[in-house]
Amino acid sequence: MTVSQRITDKRDDLIQLTQDLIRIPTLNPPGENYREICDFLDKRLRQHGFQTQLIRAHGTPGDSEKYPRWNIVARRDGAQTGECVHFNSHTDVVEVGQGWTFDPFGGAVSDGKIYGRGACDMKGGLAASIIAAEAFIEEHPNFQGAIEISGTADEESGGYGGVAYLAEQGFFDPNKVQHVIIPEPLQKDRICLGHRGGWWAEIETKGEIAHGSMPFLGDCAVRHMGAVLSEFETKLYPAMAARFTEMPVVPEGARQSTMNINSIHGGQKEQTDDFTGLPAHCVPDSCRIVIDRRYLVEETLDQVRDEVKALLEGLRETRPDFEYELTELNSVIPSMTDKTAPVVETVAKAIEDVMGKPPTYVASPGSYDQKHIDRIGKLKNCIAYGPGLLELAHKPDEYIGIDDMVDSAKVMGAALETLLLPKG
Image (cartoon, rainbow, N blue to C red; front, side):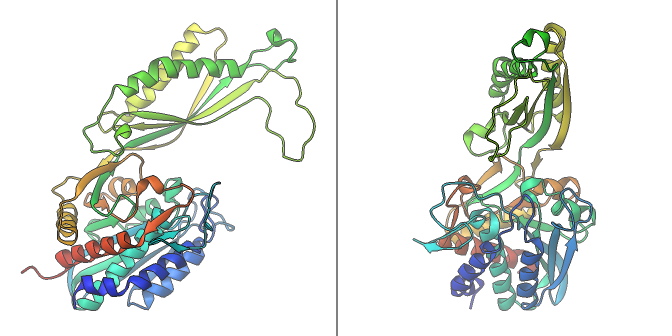
């Protein structure tokens, strides 16, 4: 038998495994059921000869006794020494949102697809990597090297309680792990080489509270924020739209610099739903926005910061009584793996062998855990490759195609044969 045939025969197991993972609602925030999904994976992988470690990321953002940040790393050593191939998948999923016609945590199968929150992003990819590894081990029990599979926390909120923590603990040391595949949903015939950078910041404009009938006695922070937004519209957005990257970022619109305004809050706090009164009449003395600036490999983080700060300083000089505070929340450096890296060439050949056509090389518009493997772990030989359509991530009626999972598992199995079997 071949690895490919074994994966075909495991189709029903792949479906059931994906459904089981979807049915564990690992919502982030706040970080629910992380231990439950690690325990589930622990039992599954131990049954197939993996040695497992459950690792809590103590002290990381969000970690608490109520919502501990649990991760699992499983390892199966071969009969001989050799290189290690690591499949990393995050186990957390985003909020459900509105508009579903399927149970978000039901794992329903319909028309060749499995529906549920996290089906695409990325429990289907996790299941495919497990099936691929199990089929490979069954076919080649005396392989060289090692296979690792990890299920990690908090990728949807930066990965600091997951891959970042593991990287700090040495789990992605290039002396221990040589190849990393992250089964994010970039489509079964694509190899994702990396991602754009990101900079997140809060801007607060200051004012002075006064009676709303006499706004001239106060200073409206919301109007000051309006001036900030106007500067963005007339100066920053046109400047970003004129910049393009040579990175193969998809979709096309993400080949430019972009910025999203995540939120805006000014004046009185919103009352609870059971409050039936009217608002008080006050001039707002504070207004805050959170910005999400995605930048290109051709830009630098300092340039991104300085561009926003220059606009704010310009307003301080030209707008009466304008005061602001800029607080950086997080930043991510762009990451890009070379097309000649061993894992890239190996997976490219596997895609061509399984699907009969060469892969498309892409980069992600948003960041994922490659950033930590690259920057903290110092491991460059890393890609994202997995089943699913990126456009479905975080959407209602998220799904994963069953045939896509099978094909991707076959690609992963073929890659394992190239990397962990004796040459020739």
